[in-house]
Image 1 (cartoon, helix red, strand yellow):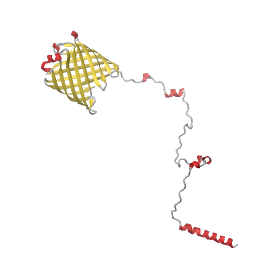
Image 2 (image 1 turned 120 degrees about the vertical axis):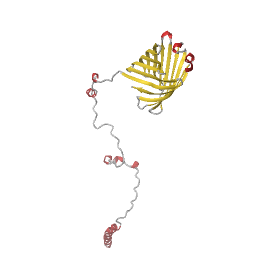
Image 3 (image 1 turned 135 degrees about the vertical axis):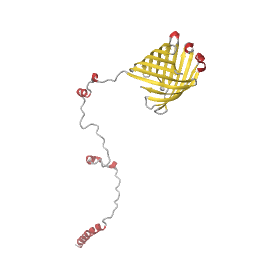
Image 4 (image 1 turned 30 degrees about the vertical axis):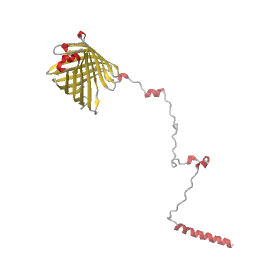
Length: 301
């Protein structure tokens, strides 16, 4: 009986002491012991309901479903016909097949050892991508009179993306007389973007001339362009009355620096050197070689 009374008194004392203990420890941050790491390999996952777990909160990314929730219908012939209706070619507006270009490559004034003068070289064509009519002209004036000028009319056919074969006629105009030549040649863009042309001329009296020209554009900037040029002329026989000698007649090497204010208009300055060889040099005498300063403009339309 005394033990029962003692236990009752102890219980009453503890009940009275607990509120005071809680009030005295209020506001204190009591550190909780760290939880022991869980070994997931020893857990029985078969008894766990994973469908109720919040995978987003756990940092898991669920893969996208491989199959759509609603199956995609298989396209039918009617669907394809509606997506690709027949094209009415008669209603389409085609680009014109006839194009044209006129390039005045050189229109310049020159000042050399033997005097001053003007010179020009121009090329134009009209036609399509394969067949074209080409017109070429060049000439020179000195001392207020025309020393030489020529005009060529050629049929050109593209034989590759970069080359054309030309066949036609050339007419020379001189102060004393004129001359007609049959012409055949090739022109185009050689590897590394060298603009090249070679033409063979067949004239009266069995004369044969060959002319080759190579030029290249060096882009110093997008608008400042340096253009070196080399041109050579050969002849099959002597013609003293025309100043033509057998073999290599003349070589011209030039260097022109132009600035393209627009792609269609570019003034330039440069230097050109001409030299005659063999019998042509003997016929030219003191004029066998000449160095000229040039200034001009290059345009195309």
